[in-house]
Image (cartoon, rainbow, N blue to C red):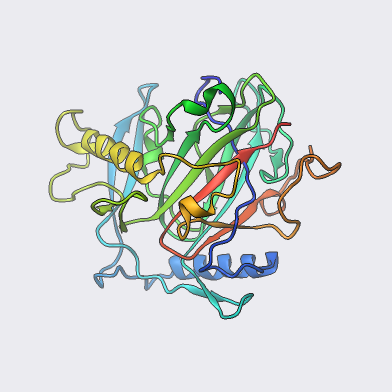
Length: 321
């Protein structure tokens, strides 16, 4: 993947459903669950698990262009959000997490074209620019990691694409029910090899352990008693400490190895998020399975993704062949 504003190649491997989320969900089920979970997250009476009103801390940070950005970060325990029950299996499944993902085509100047694509079924070209859009049903912290699974690059270690210190807002807590995008402009590699990435979501304030085991860490990384709401020195408190600790956290949280050639279920379950696609897994070898169609509305282009826990991984495959 070429280094432009960022490097990534993404979207999308049809995700195998977890045992905890019903396997035969319809798109109607997914939309209903997503809407219900979003409404609960945005309730004016929402409390944390400690019985307190959700709190945020705002840091003022210079981006790579020298402009000040406000980075709003969740503080304290996670929100107490009742999961949504959905039918579709032997018994109702409980949905704790939901996200919609799609892409917007762009150009080398970073133009917002409004041309949206279904990341599950779009046939990408080499050197194609785009923005990665998403909307979550609950407040979360989010990371994006690039994986190298095929060809000469297979031995490379996974690389953290976002959060990224050049773009301070990538460290912010993502609020529920607000469509937004990674500020990086992404570009596919100058070849026709499929590319791979992993989107990881963690409920704001949740303490989680790495997939390979180890001590739990609370996300986002911040201590309201120690960190001032101003710029901090890289070696001291403030946002500099948040940056460093957050980078370490996501490095541990992201699985070191994930096979995109086979089902990722064994390496990620039960944290694997379920992408609801009634058409099933795309088969690029069949005519018409991949498309070059663009859409005007996000709900026409997006992929609905649900999770049965407060942390989840979504493997992504950028189909080019």
